[in-house]
Length: 130
Image (cartoon, rainbow, N blue to C red):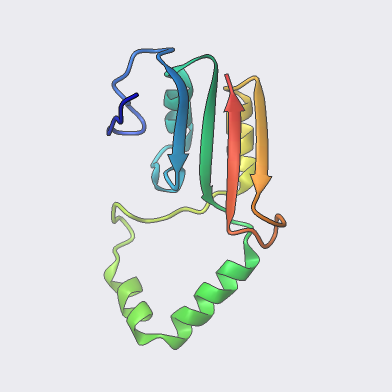
């Protein structure tokens, strides 16, 4: 195998050339989720697997903890002000069903797993089978 570094929306690989595509905390940074998912599935061989792990927008505990920390910590507040809205590292936490719905149009099987309960799990994993 080899490691390839490229734009997630234009991988520069042949169609149906990979057995698996793995993305960990990647989709939250994609400007166009649908385009990124289409590209990931395009490079998969028939029967190939797509595995995505990212933050869970439903993780209530994490949201509350972050908000509290932001209110109490001057350094966190200063960092938040220093990060422009248009910056390249803005995170968009995904609602699990939004990603699942997009994958269902591209993969013949889609499964979703939470590390714990749906409402408390920081991370969610999606697996798509082409």
